[in-house]
Image 1 (cartoon, each protein chain N blue to C red):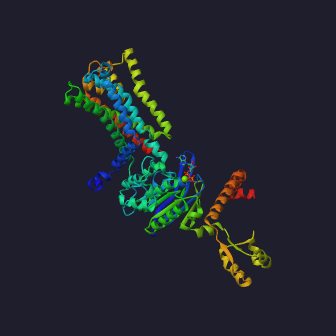
Image 2 (cartoon, helix red, strand yellow):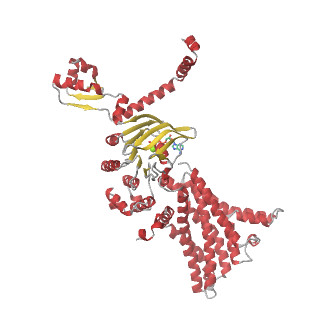
Image 3 (tube, each protein chain N blue to C red):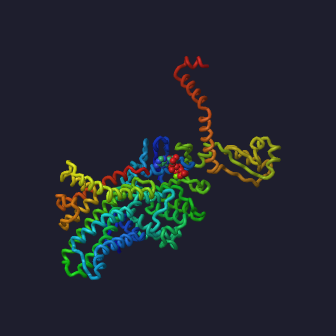
Length: 282
Length: 333
Ligand SMILES: Nc1ncnc2c1ncn2[C@@H]1O[C@H](COP(=O)(O)OP(=O)(O)OP(=O)(O)O)[C@@H](O)[C@H]1O
Ligand SMILES: [Mg+2]
């Protein structure tokens, strides 16, 4: 049935690999686990106010997205890393990497297939959690316009997806270099800590110090050099918030520029991953 | 069927300073099986990976079906894609997927139909377990799955790295019968194994490798001749006969007669017509003895080299001296 109706799709090795990764994530309960975490996060941010006051009281849409993105910026990279860390070490340890490479496939096809698979898992989980929140808001709250709310949440899910892709690829880079799974996890947690916490602390310190060379260009550059900062900036920019972190309100970038930078991150990481895969000793 | 399916030419490969393979050359024809034998760390798996194009050798080249080796995308000399079948050593697949899902996955990647997968699962006796997750499989069941995976596409070249590890006698018999059927269709098979007696009846040629170097290559008969190992004959009352008959006494050792193939007629005639002995057993040296012989030979030559470095150096210089400077050589003598 599937075979005859979609012969072309079924033949493409990229999609076969992607489908296998998705199936694997369902079996691992990764999809349910990540979705559940995202739902808890999203609902607690959205409905916590009502719990305190005892009546249904929802935050303003802008404030909601700001709070959501502040927490998502920690959780999404972590989930992406946990999904991708064993993509290559795992297959290397089980001997299937050798096997796949003896098949009529290119290395880029393997990377792309896995990226599509893992990306879909993240997209599905965040759509369920954040999309579900949006739908509930429209249904329960009176003050939310359906179209506007959905647009805001679509934008939020899209940027979350790009952030997830970036960290999935970072996971691949480490997975391609590592010789043991445990080491891959360790290194990735360090990378996560670096990007999500340390970088911003240093950036804020530099800003507070008010050094002479800190002009707008340097700040923009520093933001572009960290995908999590790009994500924060995208979300603040998209809702046009004034009261966010001063750091991001100072950026003079257009939203498209920020999205482009995230896209550049993904492309560069893909190229590096291909390069590392080609040089991986077997 | 007489074309070379795999042709390895003067392949040398290093891992850092370590020489894993040294000037390795051999060929396997279509429809032939070659056993690749050697101690642990001899370089067998490395050689298989080089044939597959997974590792690019430092020196030398490999050709598959007459065409250049481009790994999995190799083309034969006729411009047809080469179908490769490969079973890696210690493959353990994906724990969370079922046996059937795993075969479907690999079949899809090779463009093989689901019907073929169903037949293979049936043939390999995995029907009862096909819907169970792989983590519940025993080692031999995984190995069967791995072999089924290797022959999915009816390959032109089949490379098996220790395929019978963990297989019960029935399953390994089935594996070799499957290989025999594939050979009929012109498939060239290279099997790397340590189970010599198991593979002996199924091979056309064998190559013995030690420390990355080829020790011997040929059919069983050629290897026997090359090794100079004797045929063994056992029979009742041999000790008495050996005392009486000078021909036999020369060949008599440890309650048996040992002789070359050329002497066989003479010995047998002597036993039957002269002494009326018809109950005897003749044993030709098997693959295991041949293997042990070549390994011991290479061991002793290595030891000799290691033990007498100074002597060796001396003999080399004196040889050089004799070759290149007759006067110096004469003085030395
Ligand atoms: N990626 C690698 N890096 C460094 N050395 C390696 C690598 N792969 C193999 N070797 C070395 O090359 C030699 C040959 O290894 P190989 O796996 O080919 O042996 P083998 O003949 O298959 O042995 P076994 O019978 O144990 O499977 C070994 O000494 C091994 O340590
Ligand atoms: Mg090996």
